[in-house]
Length: 572
Image (cartoon, rainbow, N blue to C red):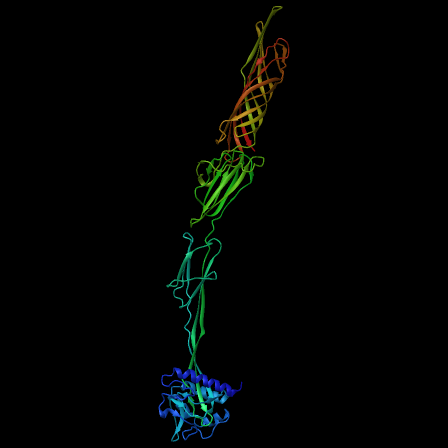
C-alpha cells in the first residue's frame, strides 16, 4: 500500500471519528444532498485555491512543505498557540522536516475544526469549516502525537507479623504501605481486610518458619494526544481535522518489598538415656532431657509406678538401684512454655539375662514421691550375693565318765566344749525377690577342756580343735522392697572337728572325732552402703551337731554351737 493510500485512510478515519465528538462542528456529512447541513454559509468551502489560499505555490511533494512553511513558521506557531495547541507546534514542524507525512483526499462533506488562510496578507485561522465543493483535492496528512506522563508516587512498604504458639494463630499488619500493597505468606497471596490486616491459623507451626512479604508497584499514566492536520496540496491551507485522539496507558513507577518472619513454635521434644541392661542392685543413672517442664516415672514389672521427679526443667538425672528382675519402663513427659507436650520412654532390663519383650507392666497405681536433690535410690537385689564374715563360736556342752575302782583306783573324766572363732564365706543365688539358695563354708577352731581325777589326784588340760562346716539351704527374704535385706532359712550339711589331745597326771588322752551330718537355721541382715553393691552383714546360726570319739564306750558330745557372724556382703 503506497503512502497516498495510507494518508487517505488516515484522513477519513480522523474526520469520521473526531468530528462526531466535537461540540462545535456539525455531524460528518456524506456525499449526499444534505452534505454540510447545519453549517452557516460563511463556514462552507466550495473550492480551494481562492484568494484566501495560504500559498500561491502548490506543494507536489512533502519536501515542499518545509520550504513553503518555514518563512511563516512564527505566524503558524502563533496560530497553534491561539488555538491552544502550543504543545503540538514543535512536533508538527519536526514531522514535516523528517517526512513523517501521509496523503489523503479532501472530498465533499469533509469538515475541519479550523483552517489557516490569509486575510489581507495576514495569517489567520477560522472555523469550523465544511467542504461542499464537487471537486476533490489531494492533501497531505500530518499526525502529531503529544505525550505527557503523570509521575508515579513513591512506594512505601511496611509489614509486621506475630505468631501465638499457645493460641495457634498468626497476625499480619501491612498498614502504612502504599495503596494496592500485596501480601504473601510463604509465597501464597493473602486477602487483607480494609485496614490492611490479616489473621488466621498457625498451621504446621512446628515444621517451618512463616515469611510474610508485602510488595508495592506504583504506576503513573502516560497520556498520548494525537492531532491530525490536513494540508491541501493546491493551497497549503493548514487545517485541524478535529479533536485529538487520546489514549492512556499505565507506566511502571517505584517499587518496594519488605518481609517479616514468624519463627516456628518449639516442637516439644523428650528423650531418655540410660543403659539397656543392668544387674540387680547395680547403680546406674537415667537422664531425661527436653525443652520444657519434665516429669519422669518408672514402672516396675509388677506395674507399680514410682515418680522420680517433680516438674524439673530441661534436664533431670535419676540415680537408681532396681531390685526386681525384668523390664522397668522409664516414662517421661515434657511440656513447653506454650502448653505443647510430648512423651518418651526407655526400657531397662534388670537381670543377667535379656528380658522377655513386653515384660514391663503398662501401668499401675502411683506410689512413692519425688526424691530430694533430683536423685532416687531404690532398694534392689541382684542375682548373686557373696558374704564374707568372721564368726564367733559359742558352745557350752560337756560329757563325763567314771570308772573303778580298779586295783584300788577310781577314775573320773570331763570333756567340755567352749568358745571359738573362725572365718566364713557364703554364696547365695536369688531365684526370685524373696527366695535364694545359699552355700556356706566356715573354718575356725573350738576350745576344749579335759579334766581327770584319780582318787584324790586330779589334773586338766586345754586344746583347740579345728572346725570346718559346709552347709547349703534356702533363704527367705522377708522385706525385699526394703532398704535392708532381712532373711532367714534352714540348712543342712557336714561338719568336721579335728582331734584333740590332752596331757594329765602323767598320761596322754586323745579324742578322735568323726565327720558329722548337721542341720540348723540362720538369720541374717544385709545393710547396703547407699547405692554401692557392697553392704554390711550381720547374722546368727545354730547347728544341731553331735560329736564323739570313734573309740568304744565314749559317749557323744552334743556340741550344738551358736555362731555369730559379721562382715560384708556384695551383690552382683
